[in-house]
Length: 332
Image (cartoon, rainbow, N blue to C red; front, side, top):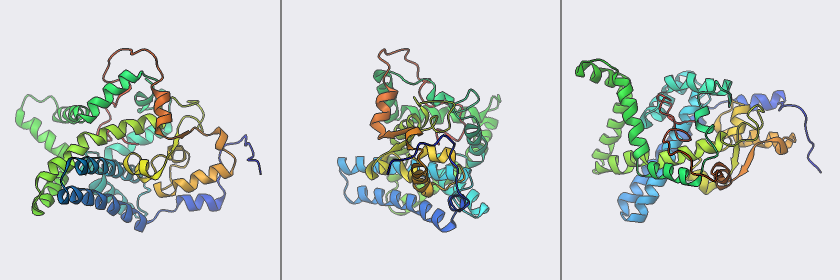
């Protein structure tokens, strides 16, 4: 039976709307435990079988789950991670956001502004998508900086400098930094303490900080490109945001917790991440598939995003990841 071609915007039935809005404390807890469980298993995998291949696997898996923690914090920003508001904000901040250096409190208003003004001049995330397409040479320069940890180091250093302020007093600048980053420092000190108690203190540096400064940066950049760069129509809600359809292996290392269903997230911002595939099926069943901005894999998106033939100016900021996105750093 042919799919009908709708002329209207997506419209949920009361039952569909109620289903997509329903949140679950149990599912929220499971997702948070799943992220940390995968990280612990990946660390244990390398500790048990230390070799170059297992190290690369651990870095990729852990970096992917670090992005997963950021994604779960993003769900908490929409109050969709837990049904209980206190659980949502507390666990979303302390178990998801702060360990990877992101503040739920600062991220929420910033991100909601992105939703109100998606791909418009007021969109604070426009810097992520506006420079595309770029050349392949420019893209690979960015990838090189990301995988070497240069991007992550520079961004963290700029955050610290901004938070220290302009006081002439070294002590005051230090106090400012501690006040702004105390939960990041405390959560990371706890991770260090846990690895030390397990007799592998070095795992904090090699298997937590290193993925955070390298692979996390790589996949965050790719994911940012996929969501809003080189889309079909900045003024059409069905075309100014992209869903990237991909297989489970790619979702594991690049797009955890259904973050690839980004169009559905923008249309139904109240929906928990684990229900986004259902939202996608609802749209397809209503006949919106031909009108939706869909890509069959991240390679398809990257080909479009790197279609510029000339190399252009070698700027580190345009097309990269903005340095003014305080503590929401390159999230959803």
